[in-house]
Image (cartoon, rainbow, N blue to C red; front, top):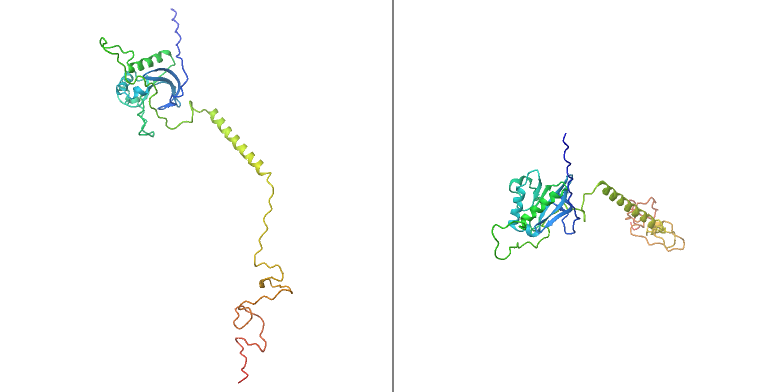
Length: 286
């Protein structure tokens, strides 16, 4: 049997760390690393929650604001195989053969002063240098750097007006990620965060115990005597019922003299020289 030729190893593309100005997330995809960049845009390694790695192309600020550049980008994506395009989004990318791959972000909050979302596309990625070269070809077709002239050039050199605006196009992250988050939080991160919160709560409880256990004891305040409670002294009130011998007699209040118009009932029988309401005394003149 003839021997089969060995399959040459796949050349892997180098990956570079993200810059501070790079977005954290584009559409549903979290950015992981940089692959290549041109004046028309940048290529990243990205992934979505629970998905595989993809190669994400995002137009630059200048290209995203140029209608002709957006049309060239859409034309390049619509010419690809449907299995190559995983998803696409941004302004003007919901038309053509690949319109079914469009992912709308209309349900996210929008500010009127913000620019429209920059066009982007997520392509199937195997980590090879060949895939990165294809991304560079698409971006160079947008800024016309490698496009041959249709006729003999004459006159001044042609230059796109947005070629110097190489910053990334407008993106929107919703819901908002944690500050500085570059990757999904795994179970180890969640466990460490929970243990750290439990440790902080335990330290706060220990400090509260140490602060309040050394406080000096404070006696309860003595009750303030009310005017109705007598002490048995000579200046006692009539309600005490036990005035001392040296005290002056209390002046009777109206109705307390036992007279005929007394309001308080009494069990004392009136004597013969006292008249009550039911026993009138005889008039001596009669």
